[in-house]
Image (tube, rainbow, N blue to C red; front, side):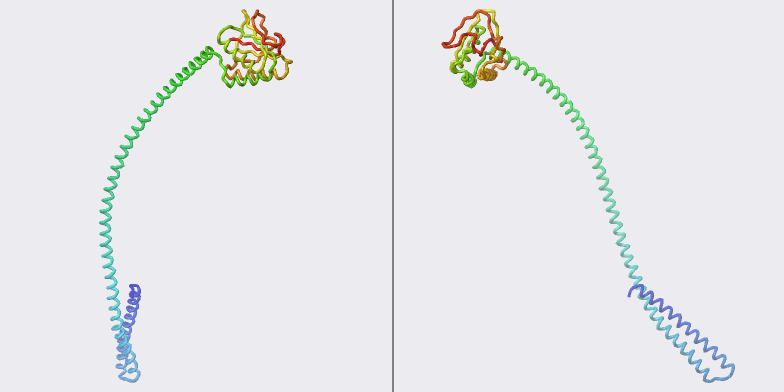
Amino acid sequence: MDKNALEQLLFSYNWWMGVSTIAVAVGILGEYVAHFIFEKEARRNKLEMGISILFGVLVLGGVVGEYIFGTRLSQASEKLQQIADAEVAQANRDSAKARKGAELAGRQSAETSERAAKIERHAAEENARAAKALESAEKARKSAESFKLEIAQANERAAKANSIAEQERLERLQLEARLADRILSPAQEQGLKTAFARLKGKTVDITVVGDSLEIANFSNKIMACMREAGMLLNVRHPLGGAAARGVLIGVKPDAPPEFKQAGEEVVAILRQSVGNGASLWNFDELVSKSIATGANDAGAAPVGQSPFRIIFGSK
């Protein structure tokens, strides 16, 4: 039985104890009153007997009730006391556990505080190291920026030097190109032969201006391609006063289409090696008025009648 049920039962026993006590008191008082009344009247009869029995039963019932309910009240009180003692003992045990837990918590708190203090000290040391690392990193960054600036300046100087070197190289190449002999590759020679083959049996008027070995070699190679293609050549060499640069090709405006096509193809082929040193020119301007020596291939048309003219000059 739990504590609440015992408390309710104890209340009920107390209530019945009170009722029993009142019954005893009422019974005794009733007997006394009845005895006093009937004794004064000097008579005893059945009514007195009945009242005496009634109050006697009431007293007896009250006494029995006091005994029964007193006993049960005592037993219930003992049980309740046992429960209370058990609760007190449990409370004491809980209190002891709580004290032990508090002591353990205190020790843990002290240990935690000590660990926290160590952590704080460690954190402070780490912060100090981090500050030094940041300081070192900042110095390294500044050094790196300085190095970058020096590298950029060095790269700029190198770029300028490279630019100057490249300019000097180009100038050297241009000088070498100006000084070097003009040449024809085997592919260019074959291309010239194919282009000149359209004019097989046709006459071309050629003027070679200058008597240098380079002019002679270059012009002779081109004239050899013409002769292999079957063209007929009228070649003139001015004796003095004439001047020309590059290879100038002129086609008479009313010439047949094969002349114009051949002239364009020859210029394109020669430009592969001499660049702008070969070009189409006004047909009527390609005339040398100087006294010249020369030779005509057998079967060639008279000089001045061909619709195709070429002047070979210096580079």
